[in-house]
Length: 433
Image (cartoon, rainbow, N blue to C red; front, side, top):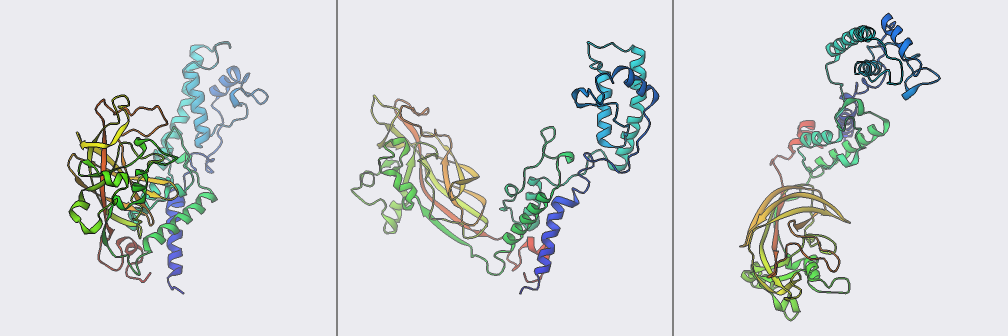
């Protein structure tokens, strides 16, 4: 049995408390009644004004707008009660109350009421700011908690926020303490999130997954190659892939009179081979480098080799349909987005790059979760539609496309050569995990 299990459990409890309890200890200050607040007698002028001008509509039997001023105490040191009387003050000040159909108080009576009410309210506000500050203390929202765990464990790939309950909103913000409550559900989820984060951060400390560099060719990926052949579900060239060598159509591969790839026996030609698309990733056109699956969660470098090309029209009459045999050099660079893909259909955007008319190798550093693969997407292109839909980028002489050659993956990359990663070292130092 691991002698440090109690320590791990203590860390989990501490992390959960950090997110849900410590910062949130007084998150309810603006919601619940302040136990130290005292009920004060309403100022005489205020009581008289309310009795004469307000109680006809705001009493126990007829609480218009849900407001019963007959039974509401005067406790300006309590936040909720304070906010209620501020609302009364402001409605009277703006002459919204009493309503137009009711008798109007004199200007002197209104002025006296506002002065008598504002004085204790301002005193209570000043005292609260002096004691507690202007902001209500609050817990971390789920985005902040995720970023905190990422930074603490030096594990920027952690996906935490989606496992936590939605944060409350107030004034359309998710950082207002009065809306960030703490419940037993919240505590349970924070505990689970802390356990997951600790497991992810310490998973490979005993035997790290070795760092490797592997190249995955588009012609070897079933999701690229399978779309080159029409079938009963797909007979539209916009939804197909284009076997390309250089800037020209690879007719033997397209017509299945030759191999799809020359493989390792001809490295020069293999480098020129690729699979093209004229639409962005969308059902049923979703090519991905499925042969790669991240062996461990962590940091990786992705290098993508691709270039743009131009697909001529299928015919003069159907110029919006691309020809898969009449291809030529591209006319402009194209933006590419890379997504992490996890079965069955979870996508997470990693970043992007531009590819040029000549084959371009772009590189980005990303954070991957164990088991994720990579899906490229030519994001400027249209998403394929049912029949009679015209590609908006198509011209009378053709339309743009992108040819993907290969994806090279280096990783997982470790920021330190120490046997203990930086994140867990902050918690456990040199202890054996």
